[in-house]
Image (spheres, rainbow, N blue to C red):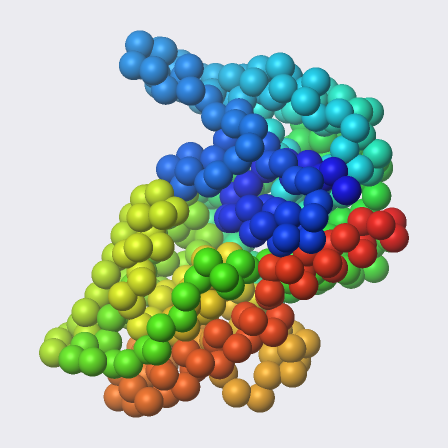
Length: 379
């Protein structure tokens, strides 16, 4: 099969591509690298002109005055000129409803062209989109990325990009993709719940993880327990990073001789990985019900990860022992869980082993690629 994967935010599509290529399929990724993360793509729509010195000064000035970033327009223009290369694919899969990240009207035009040029169109539910935000706004989910806003509405400016998915202009994009896609695939439980009962929902396919690229060395405590916290200011509130920061302040005071804390902020993906390699514990997010991509890759490396691992997750995978620590927006709870691990380093080793086994069993990139092929072929 010839497969085009549109958009990349977490390395999901790169890992899926690696699995599909192993199965002898022809796969291309188009995207902008997602800013500072700099993910690999085959066709780049990165807004390079807008980053050049003189144009960037003008760009920043226009953004300050009007709130408009003309890098969006550049991404759309670059995608438009690549359209002749995006013809005749057996499957086109969108990372979300607006994977090109250009002006709404141009996004809709380009997505219509893409659908016309190809056989099948599938949509991933792997983050913020119209259906998920609409569901979360009803406060029916135990917790979501909107929970901090519900608890403190003064944070609204930090959530405007999420509320934009409910706007009339975005709704037009949603309506087109929804009506013209062959189906929607959820990548974890945070997105399964909003889609239950939807006629377009094709089920859950867990995130693929290329375990061949992620070695898992034996995790031993040594002189100090190393705790890693990666910070992306763009989703700082949505991930509840403040709870981790407060918990770490207490841990530093409580165990000054037993812990080393590493923090990293807004750095490229490869640098991020290198920094957390020496850690025992990785702090990911508190408002999730399941693991995101950073958490899964860290688990594959045998790290003890604090992230989403709620009841739905443990029941679905029939886990009787912890392979991951369920994180909650509660500083005292986080301090308690961290303290237990620091005082019981053998538990770190045990969870590390179970984490790797879990990823090998449930997230192997080749087996996940096979699941995608089956869904694409049957719909």
